[in-house]
Image (cartoon, rainbow over all chains, first blue to last red; front, side, top):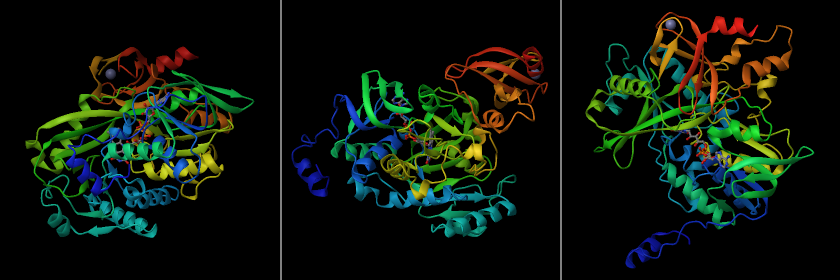
Length: 416
Length: 90
Ligand SMILES: Cc1cc2nc3c(=O)[nH]c(=O)nc-3n(C[C@H](O)[C@H](O)[C@H](O)COP(=O)(O)OP(=O)(O)OC[C@H]3O[C@@H](n4cnc5c(N)ncnc54)[C@H](O)[C@@H]3O)c2cc1C
Ligand SMILES: [Zn+2]
């Protein structure tokens, strides 16, 4: 069914009893042209673009839990295109452009809100580096605006601008950045893929691969063997395990990242704001909760929950930036397992196994990448060639020395 | 999380800095070749169960410690000084 205002009206007249489930729950077939492992944002968007753009509809997405139960449903929903380096810059720019027409493309309300994303500067040096970042963003064709101290104060009156340790000196505003409803993004892609014939198979864990003479033939799953012409994996925090089943050793560590939400409050902050001292950022959801996050817990983890020291650390940063946040009650905190790559940049590539493709290393920025990652991965799987927006995300870059290290931290995945 | 420092005893994990896999103790010989260094610098086993890892007792005795920790439950098992771990390996 195509969604429209008329449908909402008509279904309203009949007590909303006639809405149909948005996707089927099919039994797995014995063979697919393409199998995608992992039903998160990247797996669902890949399946969608395979069917909608690259003409491959005999596709299954195999998800070990339920669709959208991983990081795609756990993130803080920030969308932006403010990267420095060649490779990242064109990719996130491509992704942001795709976001801007995604609702029309999917006929689904993903609640994209380009409310503007602000990064604060707390010293002259930091403001200089924001100016440089802004120039990079404009050179890649995106928007950036440098705010003076006064302008920042005028736009964001609710912050503590005169903290003796971290006074606010200025800010960089990226108006086209913002937020989107994370679950709706997963559901919208799932619905679009299902409508085009993709089988979304939940409770189906991939447990092994059948590989002969260097070519992938299919996957062993908790619901039996399923044959495939090609297999792509988009399993985020589980990348090392699934990769290992196919004999891959990867430049990835898994770490837990937490996020937090307060009780619903009246509208107070219209933008997304990032603190420049310490890792802390926040926005206000449409329900009114302040949604915020900070650093990883710093040690390798597969627990989808964090520990208290990081809760305290994030709360301290929040209090320094915006003391009034101390009056709000924190409702919930949760964690997701991030696939941290060794240079902080993702990998979208072929592997040494014929027909087996890799999509991983999203660190904590993979939500904004969902549309472009699906497009570029589907392009790679269907044509065998890299999409030009993602042709630097090679697995071999670590061996050849072409790392894309946005933060300049070196091979320390927890610091990216 | 509490970490049993061989010198200071059991301490809050906030006193420690995390460095990563204890594999970093096994630096290849200078002439081991590019592939060995690629593996050393970039490749990680990233297990779901026991991980051998390096912690630095930053706010304590400032020793490097090798700990075995379950990365799904965060439970610590064996801890020893990195110098001892390295000596033992030789
Ligand atoms: C707290 C938090 C905040 C974040 N904030 C932001 C943000 O503001 N902006 C941003 O851009 N990014 C953010 N991110 C990062 C972003 O959420 C992730 O990079 C992105 O969602 C990862 O891709 P995915 O959606 O495909 O992953 P997931 O949703 O995790 O999908 C992977 C799926 O694979 C499945 N799977 C695993 N193993 C198997 C198997 N063997 N067989 C079958 N299925 C399997 C899992 O069950 C899971 O559903 C944040 C992440 C977290 C945790
Ligand atoms: Zn000590």
